[in-house]
Length: 177
Ligand SMILES: [Zn+2]
Image (tube, rainbow, N blue to C red):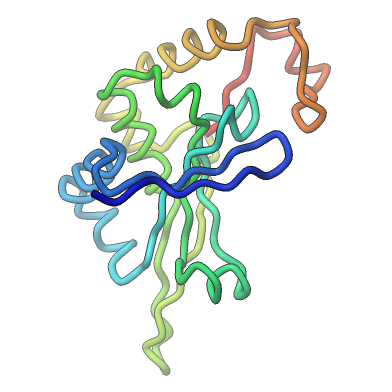
């Protein structure tokens, strides 16, 4: 059985989940069930990374398009990162939506002349993708908010790299994904 691989980087521990980690089933489930995602990530090498304790207290997950150096060393086109502590306490249904949301950020482009495929990240102008809102509504997000507040109560110590903007502090908490 393959073990997880991890590296400590300052206050963060980056973990590549083992082959039998449930996160890989969730990834596979989402890809198998969404033709748009399948089309857009077809041919891409994607790796999943869990970051402990978190990417930041206000980020549940994000996608990174690898630089050429990162691609050279990792062989990956894209990395999907998850805030480990928060991810671990979410229920499976919410995890699937988070995974789906992140993968919807990926769009492939085919060069007509060279037929070379490249992968780009697209943003959503609302807080979520239309397809997610249509399928799941907006309430699914409250579980993430609630679990995050349990883990990191508002007003407690902040990481150096996790300074919440004054504007956001006046709201309960703003979680990004
Ligand atoms: Zn997003």
